[in-house]
Structures are given as structure tokens and as C-alpha cells.
Image 1 (cartoon, rainbow, N blue to C red):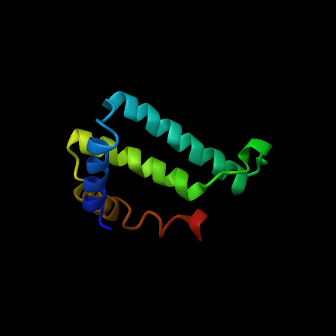
Image 2: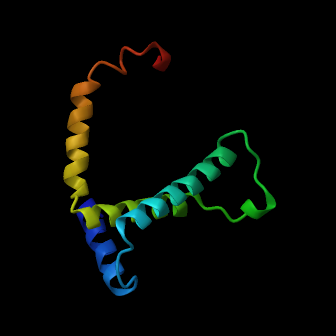
Length: 108
């Protein structure tokens, strides 16, 4: 699936099943909540924190998909074409970081 298609699918879902978009501020807060859930799993699965009994049903892929869903909602609400935005961002990184990471001793 391409990003544009994902943006369309989310928009269709919101306008039918979801009824309407939450406002941008609410969606920003929801995005932070979802990112926090990803961080919680990462800290336990790959970091030094241990899982609690209540963490037995965690699903990292599902939580990452929640982050992506809400990010797509915000893009749709603000008129951002994520494909275009990502391509421009990669161009910026290619110029800015052309030698930066290759010359970083910490990465060798």
C-alpha cells in the first residue's frame, strides 16, 4: 500500500465508522499517548525495564499502527500529503547529512 492510499483509507474510515475527525489538538494528544505506549513496550522489550503482569498482552506492531493511524489523521486534517512531505524530508536529509554519519566515529 502506498502512503496516499493509506491516507485515503483512513479518511474513508473516519468519515464512515469514525463519524468525524477529532480536532487537531485532541489528535495531537492522542498521538502522544500512542507514542507513549510504543515507548513503554520498547523500554520493556528492548530496554532494561521488566514487564508487569498487566503487560502480558502487548503488541508492538499494533501500537505502531496506532501511531501511524493518528499521524495520518493529522496529515489529512492539515492538508499534508505525506508522500510529498517524506520525499522532501529525505532530500533535506541527503543534503544535510551527506557526510555527517559517515564521519561519525560513534557509528563505526
